[in-house]
Length: 522
Image (cartoon, rainbow, N blue to C red):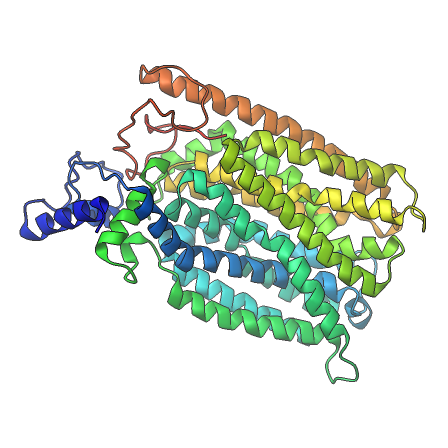
């Protein structure tokens, strides 16, 4: 047994003998701490637990198997299920459902309008309910709705199922950001978020293969797009059942592990200073979230990144076809598109951890989007230019890297559970951007969509300005935090190695403004 394990075992023995009083952590209990969290740490003495590297690796892999696997597969299912409309567009759904004008674009827009309407209620339910059980229910529900899409034969029916799909799927991003703060340290969060967000690219690869395979089915009673929706919906429903069994609700309730390991897993994230859970809605934290410029900068970055994403995501296959590629080539190019997205994502996550930089990288990863969009605006579509246009299209796939880094900034810099719930307007902004995105691709502007590309350039300009502002702000806030504690002033991202912070308020459900030990990461 490691020294860390011996320390926790001795602590547990003391608790069982009664030498450590329930509710005592060696510090006065903060009034805002969650009761379940307080009771869970009741056995902990005032002596800090130091987790050695070997134990930390073991604990991290335990969490990976139970939590990260669920996040990755679920996000893959979500992006694949939501993106089926893109593949169905070249399988004949527009003709079979008699879609005209902007009706196809509305099938994507209505998903994000539903997300916009239901995002806060589902965030509040995430705060109140066991997260694994609530996530499991939503996965099964959207799987059932997706399968029902095969029965729709007109615009009205498709709008209804797509709206319900948006309501059930909108749990993913806030739930996974919350799980990242609950189970992972701040320096791990970018890679964790990048891992599940990379499924945006992987679904392009697998979705293209699945769509191509289904497209080879001829003379079946069901249309190809109906087979696609039915198959993916049923698989998703079964996965939702498994999630309810496999995913722990929190370190406190993770009966799949020993009490010793559960305490160590919780202690691993103490330095985050963002807490584990708190079911009480605190109005002062909600007010602080609305007044915090950090939150609004994250919201703006999310919106300006999502608007181009929404349009490109819904119209990518149509755009590629307009470049002069055949339907088969378009399926295969979707695979390459997915690989490009994953390369952007994983390189950003890796560099973020290696360089301890997030917003600087987000700025740099926005630049390929700008370059690709300028090419679309200036180069005519022809047989000679289609390869160059394809490369420009791949340059615009850097949006995933920016989104990942922005989510990591949000998860690492907003503390207080209620503030986190209210601060999910970044998801609202993501939904607004994605709902507006398809609408800028007007049918009367095809095939070049010049006006859409102009709107994208404007969004990228705002995004670059917001990233620069947010980085300067967080650097300044760290200086003020250190000045208030009379330690050497520094603009270091996160905790400086010579600060020796006790992290005694880590689980007290304080906001980042209230907690004197909090340090911002950028």
